[in-house]
Length: 226
Image 1 (spheres, rainbow, N blue to C red):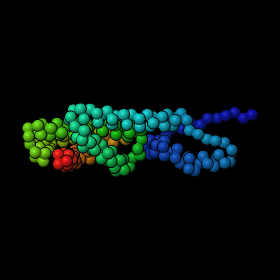
Image 2: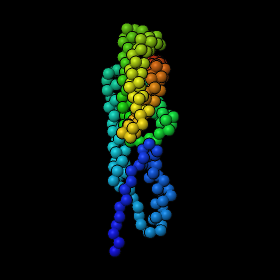
Image 3: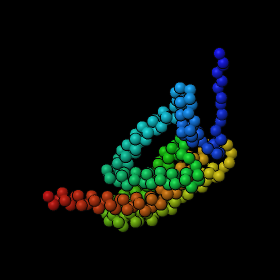
Image 4: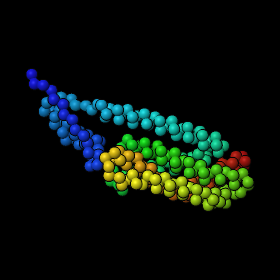
């Protein structure tokens, strides 16, 4: 009987990644091998661990969003304001995806880790803005004037928070060492997502707050009229 031989190779992360290699094998090589030799080929090891990780991350994402909503609703004493804050998360994720396209990088597990961190940073900036808005509303200022004043006063704080984070992570994007190749996708998610998320915090969040305030006034007016 012939002896079994196991071959091992490493992926050049500077040129491709394991997902691309596996996809190419599934499309071109594995079907031919299964037909020719009558075998069934499946992926285990790191690939199976990756599937488990993605499942755990999805569960963690749902739980995190729920807890974020509960905390924001408690802090702002409102069920609608947290919606305006969390509305920036999908747009921040859009910025991260666009960043991968611009940098010509594939999404990896570390990219998803970066998205988790990005969500926290974007929400933190939104809280800074809405905290001032809440204070102005408690002083009796009208919603439109209050949100404009809050955006003007917290413009520098939001920009500084975002710019310092982006500046600190930007050198990683252009690092060519092998060790940095694993961190670049995570840095791309945070840098590009935060850049787009900052613009949304300054424009979209105020608009969402005014829309929610107007909607609440309409609903309240209808209740009073009945």
